Length: 253
Ligand code: NAP
Image 1 (spheres, rainbow, N blue to C red):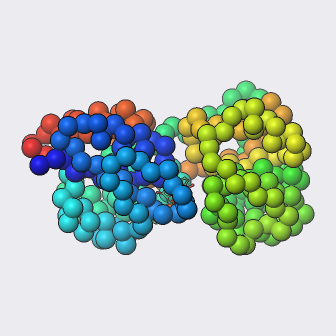
Image 2 (cartoon, rainbow, N blue to C red):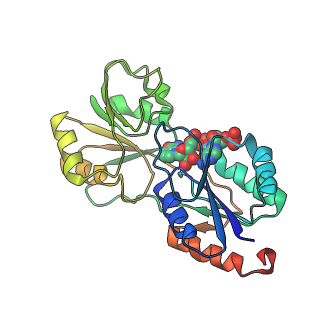
Image 3 (cartoon, rainbow, N blue to C red):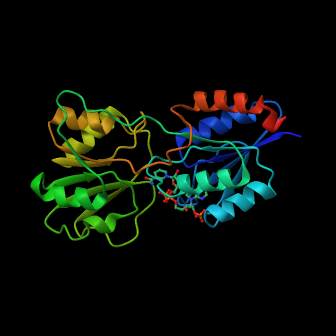
């Protein structure tokens, strides 16, 4: 019987893990997507879409589908699903690995302002600039809705739902983004402050370089906490190595 692995996804890393696992013998991979994006780029292997109904629902799913290992490769800012995965995997005694790309690190010339939330970012903005490049995604924009004296270039994969700041230009686009493209956006829209989550990774990092070059401040939202007792890998390759090790244990044989 193949080893059934559940990959909690919605990220580039999750897709790369699924690509590696489908190529392995005796492995069956199901990727799980939340269903937030209208036209997601689907990974190979089986795919399920939508919430499980909390940790209990995920535990039921793991049992019912005879899952032998779970890889939580969700986005570092997906704050709830990782705790649900930790609780569900513990409840059904299935090994769990979290994959977390390293966060970004400021470099010489960066003018970063760190905060813990979108609300914190909104508080900082009026003191930092007037024309904002907002790259935190389409969720949670209500935090900025009162900032009617600022102009926003808001980039996301799908259009946000109201409420948004009143003076907003929407840019629908999906990474990876080039340095040349980010420079051009900052120049053309006369951006004087950037807002980003500390998502990490290469796909969306060029905006940080472009902001440094332009000498503009960057509001960086720190990551939410992660479950403390779950082993963490930094890359898809490490996750595949972990799975091989898990597969070699008695638990799965
Ligand atoms: P979240 O706050 O951690 O999750 C909220 C709820 O959405 C979860 O309790 C779960 O519902 C469901 N869910 C989340 N990820 C899921 C998955 N991979 N498969 C099935 N159900 C999932 O997550 P979020 O911030 O809304 O992000 C949703 C998804 O978008 C994540 O999978 C993440 O990888 C991806 N994403 C998020 C961001 C971001 O900035 N937050 C950026 C890029 C991609 P139930 O409790 O019903 O199971």
